Length: 79
Image (cartoon, rainbow, N blue to C red; front, side, top):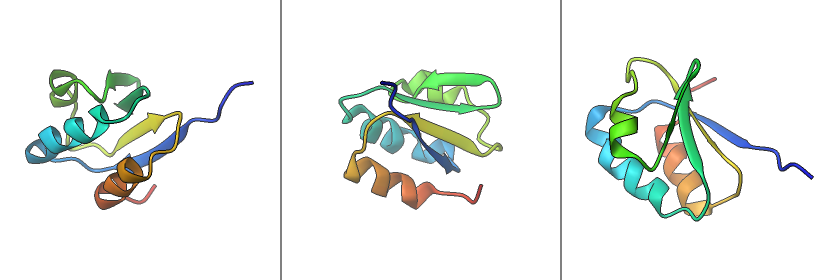
């Protein structure tokens, strides 16, 4: 059975990338971050820095993690 992916829309600034990647890296499951068709591993600092921070970003993951989801809520944007 396929598990439904959890998606959160966020806004990220270059100064927040390090904390974002460190928080995502604590998850024991895959975490992706994307906009349009450009998808990167959220645990890769170089990948995340390659994103356009002027765009709303979507974080996608397959398991619940209270600490990670609370952190994402601090970066949340409508959408």
